[in-house]
Amino acid sequence: MKKEGHPDYHLITVTMTDGTTFETKSTYRTEGAVLSLDIDPNTHPAWTGGNQTLLDRGGRVSRFNKKYGADIFASRKKG
Image (cartoon, rainbow, N blue to C red; front, side, top):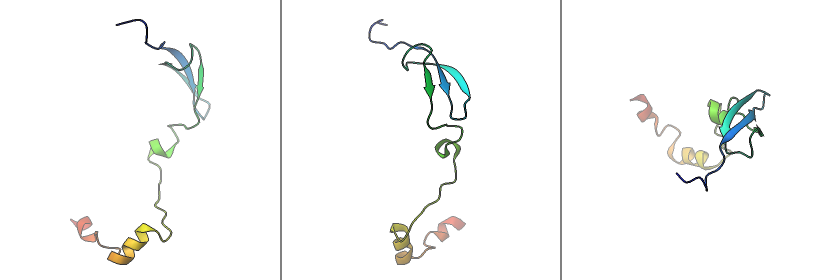
């Protein structure tokens, strides 16, 4: 493998939003750099499967239910 053209892979410190830290290897900046996270994978709904609700104020879902009925797929759910 050629030496030139490859990024420097070194230890950095990652600071989570709750203040905890850990060391990992990365190509981020230089040796000993501190990376502070804005979004924490321990608490963010994208990683924890949080409670996401569908908010529809008279939009597509409401128009579909009005046109075809709210229980159009009910027979498939019973199976």
